[in-house]
Length: 316
Image (cartoon, rainbow, N blue to C red; front, side, top):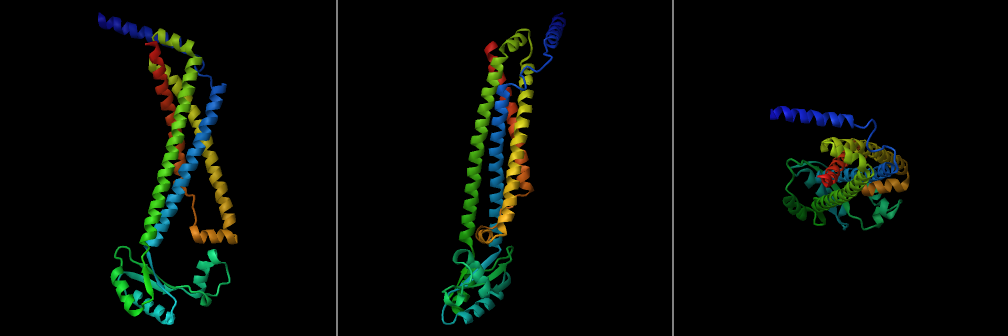
């Protein structure tokens, strides 16, 4: 008997909920608050996507630089009366060292091009106290014995010194780590501002539709039904705002890429490439931006749901 009465009561509640189900959405899709929140979500998503894309690009460039540096060692031969002889001796020793796959001495023209971003073109290397360079590619799985190489060079070429780029690798790793941490902090702040905006917008929508919410709650409509109406509204709003901000970020990166390719063909662009390398906007950055758009939409939906449940506690 009790079970029958409980089933009848559930059926009555469901019937009342179906009868009071609004023919239109509880939250108007085109009101002023919705348009304002759409603009906020688009701006926040744009800033988040720009941050994520920049972090991915810089981290990728740093990884590429570190990989290139780790695969080479450089022998510098300081200018002296026996510079040519010491360069030849250093090159021979490096070539015979186990773990070195190839080695060559840079020509005066190559050294001049390396110095061009700082000292300009038309340099006469013979008139400058510029060290000569021997560049060697190493086997990273079985690297050479650097201390032994230094001892050998100290005997045959006293003016020579070996640079295995450990300091540069450490600096690049520190720089990449700092950029990633800074990007995550900025992203966290932007997402926090987004959550707060959604909370205020949800509470405003609940207050505007308080009469409808009270009626639905009093006749026995379940909280999840009421929350679902707001959740769907803010999910659509989050997707629209997120897509708008994400597309704007992609357009901005595309414009920067086009401008960079145009600027790279100039003398100043080639010098910047020589000093800093290139920053490539690849599919990893596109996927990161897409994930950010989805994250903003999901976060908007979940935030609105939690805010609705918090608001409904007033009626309990």
